[in-house]
Length: 451
Ligand code: PLP
Image 1 (cartoon, rainbow, N blue to C red):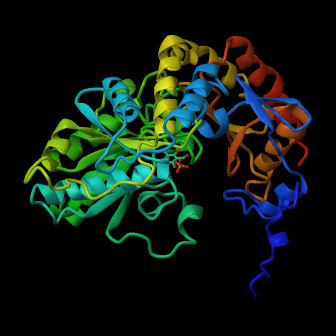
Image 2: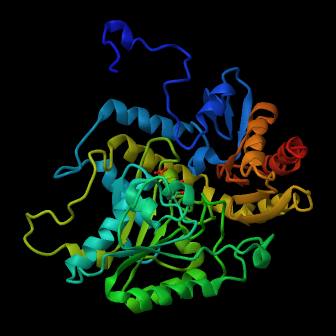
Image 3: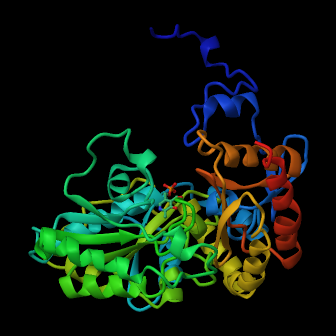
């Protein structure tokens, strides 16, 4: 039944939590005991009463420069007042070109071009579409198959969930894209438990791509997409040599390699991009989150010179790529992006992440031995702590840990199933690392030990 429309129906009800249907959230549990955030500064959130909450996850892996940083705030304010919107179809504005220059200059090899969109999900779908169009443009239109990986996360759009490998994100949503296959994921607790950085076991799993090539034939495969370090599934650093092997097999068969760097981009692993850290250059690289330090929605795709060149053929007045979004390169996002890059550079935040990596890992591994902890994985400024699940109630222990962390211990964490994933802003210092692992985490774990 339609609701009656009268002026009063449009009056919002203050403080009513009901109308917002929250994604990736148990709505009923949240609304009974909400975790509300009122403001943020640097390493902290503050709740409605002004209580400080240490940000252990850079929001959603995005606030790499810390919160409400003055240079970024000023850039957004100035942009809002100066140029609220400008099309980037057939027109342009200076900031988006400046940002493209900045983020391609930081990229390895000839990843010389940046396409922009508004999220990591759009970035994944854009990269997949560019891969398909690239093959068609060079006369290999039979290459339509896309290969993802089990436990991969590439956002929530149809392309992303099709190549993604997180079961709960897929099973509700029908048949998805046709012609998709998956590599096996790279996690094996028996072989890898409590590894710092890259596990030594597992490089051979990249060879499964050869099996898929034999099965489908290379002439049908357009691209392989992987996160260099899987994040959302619970942090899976790549086995030593795995990404290089994947690169070799892709090159051998003319398959494009796409790195989804939505989490790993912009300093999370101590480098501008994980591609640089691992010495492996993909053909396409997706980014989002850290490009604006989470301040204004933005995502995008970096492309190698040869891919861009392939499209630059034919009559010059004809559009080369029939893809884009109204808000592609939005002025405010672009201004935020340039200011964010300035902060990263001026405060040497990628270098800070690198310098703190050992301290961070040492601190994380101090939790080893806690009877609740089944595995710990670390890389860059990322740590995952797998908790022993409660029998018959998977995910409940970590959920309670998150609730207690927020309400009792002033600590914001990210959970997936029974894994706690930590990925603080890159401005973190040694004292705050100690606070996370020597104070907050032991208290959080103790609070869920009796469940
Ligand atoms: N790709 C990866 C690797 C991600 O981690 C995420 C989000 O966490 C996405 C894509 C989707 O990004 P968004 O939520 O901005 O659509």
